[in-house]
Length: 297
Image (cartoon, rainbow, N blue to C red; front, side, top):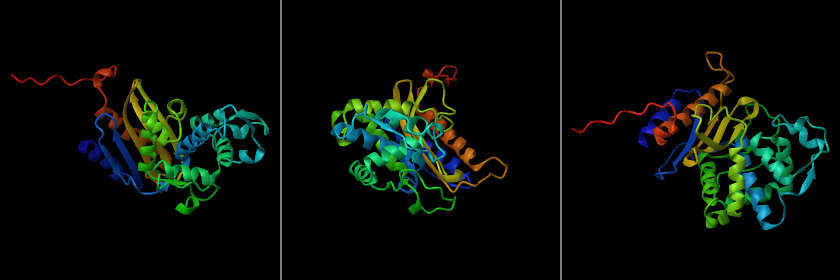
């Protein structure tokens, strides 16, 4: 783990922006972080905890996954996802809204789901499940400039989100852990499936081999100030590690003219690949060179 930490930090030290990350090796149990408890703008990674609060409401019986609701035009004034482009007044189910909120980061769905649950209830839920440094302030983020303060954003920490992801994974097979999240093992499996259906793959999954699976949620800050991703990385069906990466104060452009936002996305991909190479079984990656055995004679 120390070698992984040193290499991750070396990647971060090269950059002219702030990076925070949290890593949990799911095989050994080892944990490491850089700025893991530092508060960052969460951007759309907040939607993982919104999803779990929604599923907890379903488990409590106050909402049902097949409940229909209509989307008003007011929720379509945003720049994330696909529902912003549809004719106002269409109807979807609660389950579909949660799904779209995650897999294409649809803010129209998110705004509606947040208003159904209530910000106070979502914040109470995050505290209850141990996300003590996370705050939901808006249903849909306001259109601010790049210089907004943390108090003008939804916020979280790399460690808060990393620990939530691990609980979701554990809750798929452990009823007691699922109960701590206010849900059932079936609802944890649904949450994991939705995260695995993620369509936005330019960050954590981007450099991984074909057998890798990533259950994750991305996050883009206002005007490209942030670029985040948080997920569980699998080799085939085997969960290897949890990695959450948050970047802050990205430059508009890097010195070579590349956008700071896309540069940060590539850094996140490199960090995931570094961890995958260190923690995966090379024999299960087709075409990957496996070091020859060292002779002891």
